[in-house]
Length: 480
Image (tube, rainbow, N blue to C red; front, side, top):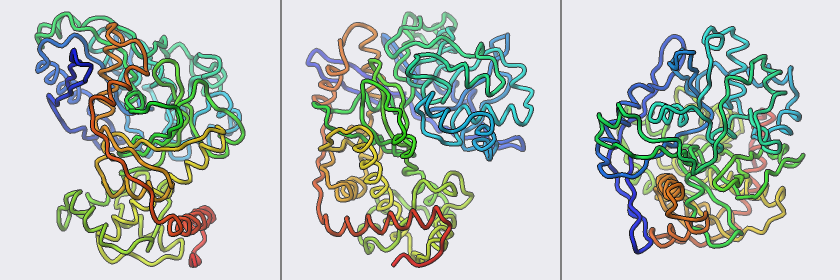
């Protein structure tokens, strides 16, 4: 829970009100989000926001709550990393070909997508789907609890692979293939829509009567990209966190054979824009590795970065998007298995593991940069790294080296800034996305990283691409 105040000097000041863990709950039936606990903490945070004119919710994408006719959940929402979607993509493709699905939606084919989550429920005969009267994506569900209004915000709706961005509607052909009525879906609203006021009961509980509930760019990356401090269009962005979401901003979706081949996605943004991007498995690899290492010793992230800086460069590399890294029980072991499969040696210490993860992420970003240039025909002369990963100085420097472009890092709280500034737009305080970005540039300090060692990075990139090919083929010969 972060509060923002827009001053008369045109600067945005933000401060944290309340921070709480988002811990999935595992059971015999799968892995779920503890939404009741999350909402309790949201209300606690709202109670600390005395005098706020509005509030808006953003979350991760693709996950959803199913509500019955009484407006209550029929089951606790699943986390997208749950194993229930194993085989769901392949099963759905027997009903609708992958080319047709991508052509209708322009969304990167990933087993976590809402369409495949729903198909897994159809395949498995889940009772909850039969009982469902409404589907609400996670931020829409929390906004419904706050305001009483059911709707689907544009940016989060587009992540689902149920929305046709050319027709501007839920795609009936996809629902027909699923065997689900599209009536469970809600009206789509755009970022900056006022949904109503905080409900009377919650206003009494929190002391925040009269506050507007605003549909912001409720997919967190949509809010983050709205806060990219760019003054021109020739940039790419990386919203760096658990995922590294790298892309460009476009006035229209880019849906063609090349974007399918490169497995890019077209997700909605502020002002009807589209984020043409790739979902790269990001700092999730380091987070999960750190969790495994903590069984013997707890390492701080700054300590890991310091150890990685001292490690020999380009000794090992992995493909961050390899399926075995999505939700392994032991990330270091998953990395070791990948290295063995691709004929590489194994790291001897934590610093080497950390460096290989960060270098691999930087090289994956170079690969995505080439894809973005190819499908868009656009000149890209700089990269903006926003969100939490912008604090990782080693990762920012490695990304500059790998891509050969200057990297502008910050703000770290881009998602919160974008969320709050869209609220300001809804309240008539800001007139455009360009004005939002001007405010961000004025409000936050940026750090610039210049590229270096181009020849070394070019050699490493060639090795990276050969490694990706070997991994795709399941080969185990040495990289050379």
